[in-house]
Image (cartoon, rainbow, N blue to C red; front, side, top):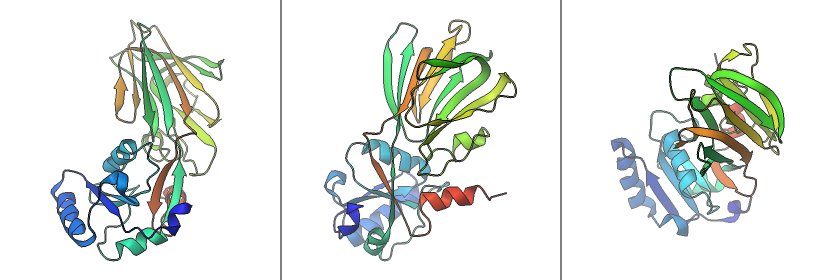
Length: 260
């Protein structure tokens, strides 16, 4: 990656609202300076995984590498917090290139909402009745009717998040795959999902949308009362995440599969 040739003289710090992160922001800014994010060689995010995702979304099109340090409650995407030798850590960091998912959600009036997701796109029932969904891959119907609480499409980076909680597979970060995972499937009861190429387009059509309303969520962006959702990977968008050597996303995803 070209970022390893940088000296990382210009660092931008962003932090969550929690007191621990704000205190770290003040100390690190005093020690290393704090430039505007779009002028930075790297952005250092201080918080938990939620802040990391927000920062990746905020600078989605800027190709600035982002290095997280854990000042929150969950830190799967974050590095250990240390204030010393930050520039040296940035210089030595392993860089993972990831691509988000593109979601287009159509409501019952045909209006489209577009959003990007780093972890997953999820389709959920809105009320007490289960959703009825049809799933097509590259316009070919693969599942005519899925009765469930919902279904999600996860990237490798997001495969250890909600996808894993829904009993979906963990994907190596460099694998050219997407995980299609049902959420509490009722019929067909034994269908556990599918692994798909990251070059396909997945279309989820809502059956009986008036009787069984459904929402679509791309990370934190929600569209309600949808009738159809189209999902594919946005290969033209590159996101760069930085991790300390031996603790990159590949290693973390492998290690997650051996946790009990």
